[in-house]
Length: 599
Image 1 (cartoon, rainbow, N blue to C red):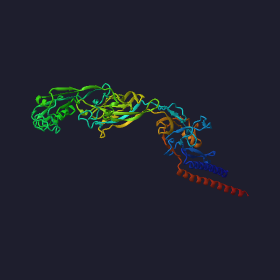
Image 2 (tube, rainbow, N blue to C red):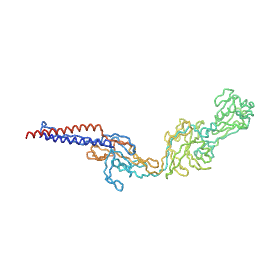
Image 3 (cartoon, rainbow, N blue to C red):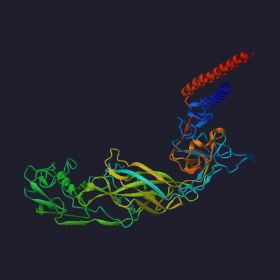
Image 4 (cartoon, one colour):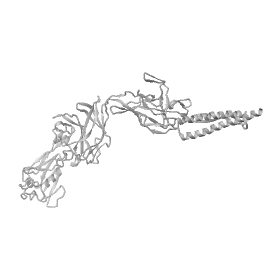
């Protein structure tokens, strides 16, 4: 009976090779199918019964399918924002509707699994892949960004609406120039806060500095008119005892005489004077006034009548005396004079009448569109003023105030800008030394009668600095607020974290859902369904939510079929099939020979 067994075995071989050919054909056909996992063929020999090993004969063969689900396909980029691919282990959870009722899908509740990620949004707002499977995930709280549950549901994004959110905080980062180039600074007297790019409260009808801040207005002392002469300004007058038509100090002061201003002594020298604390007796009155100005911060002036005006300048008070009272009197000044600067308390506001001075003595701090509780857009304008400068010497330090515009239509004595109420001081290295916290709260912010309430200005560490700038303007590195108007969903996209992000008509990008991944202990034992989906089996085990793989947005995983490898298998299968047919031909010939013997 060996010949007939050979025939049966050869037929089994043909069936097994046919099964392998069918798998090869399917793999090649699906070489371009998204997420397709090729099916290999596993051959198993069938051993006939035998009483002893030496009587054992070769058996038949059968073929089984061998899944390659765990083999990764090539991931390529896609122009569709809702396409995604899985790198590594994991499956998308999906459901396929059993029917459509009133244009809405009806699901059986059975969850399937796939790696086919060519999802797109349909008319109902569902994410559906090319095989008709609906994506599942968990929704995300748009405010906190946290998942609202842990059980995946079929996702739907249709007519999503977000209410308006009032602005409560502004994230701010900027560099303020060491020397602001304001309109007023170019024409201001040397040594004044205005010349240093700052704001002089004396130029305002009401002091705009922060409430509780005391500043000192510049006071002056004017001497009696005498023959003082500064350069060629007075051509017919004489200067003290100097010759007519000259501006030399002459013989009134002698070498060794002194003038003391605010505790600093200027000594007269016969010649060779140097620095701000020495002057030659042959120098001009202009030179002397320059030396005094270097001390007070404001250079004294001479009127057309020859009267000298001294300024309290950057000090709270002015004092001046001389060891030569006669010569000092000849300047029209009284030795031992003193003058105290007038204190002025800040009211924290700029009225409309002072707008010109405010604009000329401040720099822009940027602007941002904020929103009130109703979602009304509000243009929040900011400006910086320098209220003190380390360049003035002594105890002075670089100090700034921040203002916001409260009214664009203010007039007369109405408030146009409001001081945020904080003194921002900077160290010599440009770092912010005060305030030390990261947040500043401005109470009761209102712009053109639209209320924003309490507004927090968040300034992270190192975000606000004062470094030299050739432009003399503030460099705004960041100015962002957290409010927005109401909005309607316009489109969705999936990022690399597997988050479905919605883009709304108000320009906001809000997290809407989290795509969940699942894995199996026996992945290659899943049952394949149409459309690249799989069903859990006893051998695969139940789905386990969570996977080690990661999601790539705007990407697709291709088929894991290797065409070259499949062609190689095709050749081997063809040869094996032909060989089995040869066995059948040979066995048939042998049977015919046997029948011929009987005849």
